Length: 162
Image 1: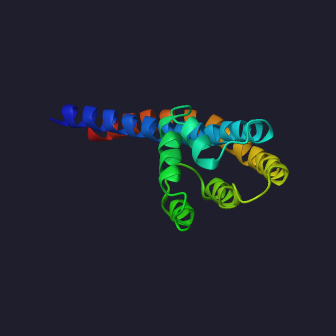
Image 2: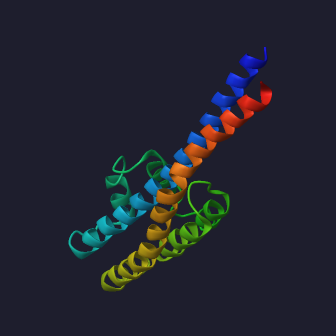
């Protein structure tokens, strides 16, 4: 019986460690998708100058699942002034700093002339590059630690139970 409980704890702890690791990868993917979205917006503003609704509709399914879901919600709530502040408070995909940067940018998105919009996109990309680097560093450092820590804790629990 103790052997079975030990194996369950080992497997549970290992799965938990890999789940934390997956969360970091999910966050990094969302941040990279936003950076790619900004690049796409910059080129669109410079050349095609589509409306916001057309632009968001054209971006569907271009990114990871979490960012696509965010864009779909954004498209549905373009006229809802509270959507971004609510999303910023309730989102669980990325860090509060990144969420604030995204919300600040999107609050002004489409409200400026084309040249000012391109400058706003460039400024956001410059600011966001620092946050993206932090996210990459955190993922590179903590991701392997979480999986190893899950395995080590599982082994320790297994030994304790025996």
